[in-house]
Amino acid sequence: MGKRRAARCALCGEVRLVTKEHVVPRGLYPQSKADSRFQRIVIPTCATCNNGTSDDDVHFRNVVTIAGDQNSSVTELWEGPITRSFGKVDGRRRAQDLLALMSPIEQETGERYMIYPARDPRVLRIVRKIVRGLSYRHGLRWPVSDEEVFVDVLKTQIPENLIESLEVAHAEPDILDYRYGRIEDTTGLESGWLLRFYERTVFIGIVFESVEAYRGLQSAGASNIFETELGG
Ligand SMILES: [Zn+2]
Image (cartoon, rainbow, N blue to C red; front, side, top):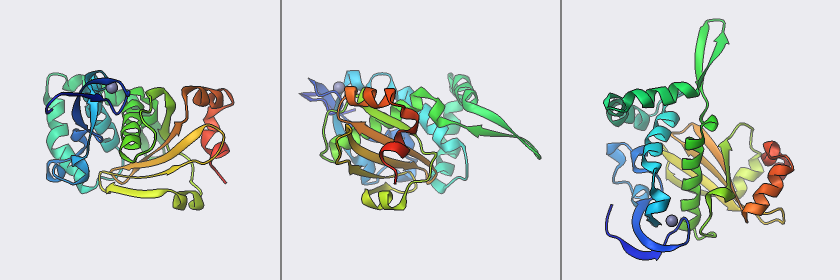
């Protein structure tokens, strides 16, 4: 979209030809919310950082809107652009992408399908990109590289005092709302993020001071990163 000019890209920090791109992929918004104040927020990004992500944006939207109860924004998306996207040439592939993420769960009443967004590297990459864009937007360190961000679907209960310590940055609650906070410690963690999409799927994000800081913690056992470093 829009005009190109030479400037520092908000995502990689290189001086390149940049265009203004939405922090939150446009496709996540139904038509009725297309003019929302938050959705209009854009950051300068280069073609390299944007390359290849628009297809992932569509997949991300399909994944985070498919499970659970639907709010009205989700309903509007399913009745419009999502259904249309399945009817297109690549619709069959998109449907297969979704099916690949679902696992049947045996229940007394028969099989039920659960969807696991955190198993999909494309979904996680989009969440990391949103966190990197928001880091720029909120005047935290930038650029933040893709390798400096950890994201996962939130599986544990978060301590109440931690949630309250985070800054509320309600964007558009029925599409995305999020909280964030700087982390003041010496373990290489820089900021923490909670992003909730469509009032249900919650992702946790952690931005590290450097790739080395992230790797150091990973080798120390990253599966419990949240409990060990932020909990309590
Ligand atoms: Zn870039």
